[in-house]
Amino acid sequence: MPLEPSDPDWEAKVRDSFARQGAMATIGARLVHVAPGAVDIEVARTPAIQQQHGYVHGGVVGMLADSAGGYAGYSAMPPGASVLTVEYKMNLLSPADGDTILAKGRVVKPGRTLVVCQVDVFSIKGTREKLCALMTQTLMTMAGKSDGPQV
Image (tube, rainbow, N blue to C red; front, side, top):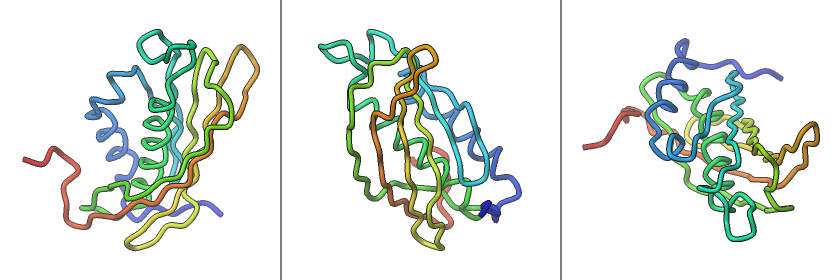
């Protein structure tokens, strides 16, 4: 069943927030799909994000997945609210050795206070997509809290 966002500006708020993410910019990640309750983020494998064996580091896979799920959930949140991850569980299934790593975040259960998401992470080499990680994530809706920098 498609998600009906409660914020008419859901897409702009997701894109604007992502554009302010220094962590995503640092690793070269980009939004490739944005829909209500669904966000995909990809990153190209570069030496800067690889671990000693040449795979994309598990921490980078985790931050990519966290952001994909977080923004999928954020798209479901009401105006004037922001998002914060409160928990996630990630299974690394195989090395992230593709030329591109793609995280597909999807809302499983939108709630007033908590939103549960699932993220599938794929390692893509040529035309081959291999599932390399699974994440289940819980997000908190922070009503009345700006999504901008907290000073």
